[in-house]
Length: 119
Length: 109
Image 1: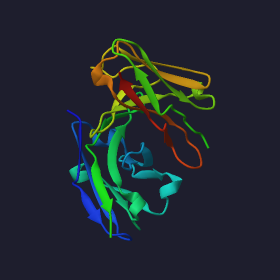
Image 2: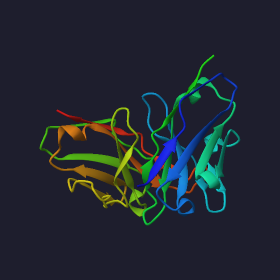
Image 3: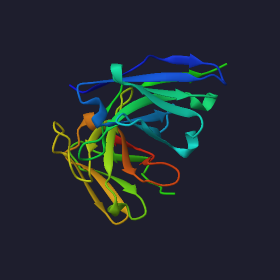
Image 4: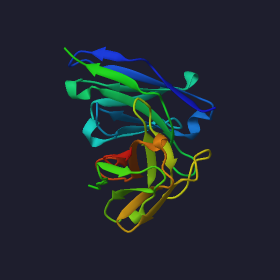
């Protein structure tokens, strides 16, 4: 079955960077895009960026340009999201999600990774 | 830039029909997807491509999309449907590829 399994919670200080992983299984890795979506406490969903495992293409929301980087390790079927220059407003649950196939909807999601930024 | 507008909350009695709107300029020209999110859980796709249901989802969930409003329709509402619901579109703009609505809290009375 399709699964996206994310790394565990992180606590970081302001100004630091965080790298969250998303390991895919149960489907052809290069056939689907991986997105990163975050959700601040009590808030809605916010799209951050997209990664195409078939070619390494990326695109980021303008809000995160210059601070977010998406990469992959094909051998482990893992996509990474690195966010730099962290500030308290970056405290949120970070989700990876898959899109592709016929509909381009986000049909599978990871369990979420809580990133807390605090001094 | 393109904006998706959802009501913050919708309330409905059990057994009744809930309609959650998602407004946007000419949204009828786009393909709209809907997600359900229960507390402490990741979002789950409930409707894609305006009207289609993922396999395994109850037929009670459906959608429509025309002109400036897309709608998620949940018939015979149950207590377990209480959740936040988000609409989503792809909008290749200068700012970003993907947009979510602000979310609607569905309360079952």
